[in-house]
Image (cartoon, rainbow, N blue to C red; front, side):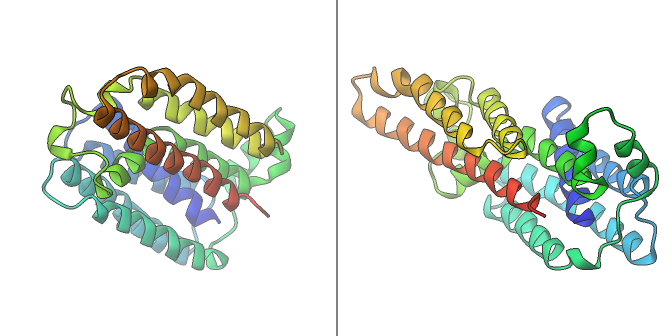
Amino acid sequence: MSWIAVLLIGVGIADLVQSVRPVRTLPECVGAAAAVLVGLWAGLTDPADLVVLILIAGVVVLWGQTVTSAFAGRRTAALPLAVIGAALGIAILASSLAGPVSGFFAAWVQGLPLAFVSDLGPERALLLLGIVLVQLSTGNVVVRLVLTVTRTVNPARHGGASDPEIQLKGGRLLGPMERVVIVGLGVAGQLTAASIVIAAKGLLRFPELSSDREQERIHRLTEYFLVGSFVSWLLALSSLVLLVP
């Protein structure tokens, strides 16, 4: 699972940098460098691990470039989804070949005063770090790509007055918050409580989805809300599956 963790960390950091500093090629380069450094910090220094770290860095750069091109309308939004899906699939299939997490990271995890993190062990703790990072900006990127692929959002009108993302204010903040809460509840063994988060979001959005008289606009907003929310929830829940021992 160490290769999966490093991949998620690289992608998560790249998207976080992109959200804070949207400079061309900088975010993916930072994410790629972070993936390699974290891998070395985690003791992945065997020849096979070093080769995979280089490949992961390449995937992070490719992810960032395809996402930027997709949002600019130069490429299909399905391409970055295919890139990250294929990379994760290969990483999962080859997870048994990955080296164990050791080195400075393992010592750091064992020295943490947080019992639940120490109980996870170094490898799952590294994976949890990657999962949490992906729930932040990367989750929003994936949701927006899916909305574009399904034509729920028209990329040409993105950011305009008729864009559902503009009309349903706060989605970029609520999405990461709910995903992190769902992951936290899952790690704590309280998945049932996650249903409260889902129900609460529906209640918060209900006035925006029902108060307007324009039925066409309401249908568009409802579709946007449902597709975006389910993709967001699935991202959080599927991440939890990776943590199952």
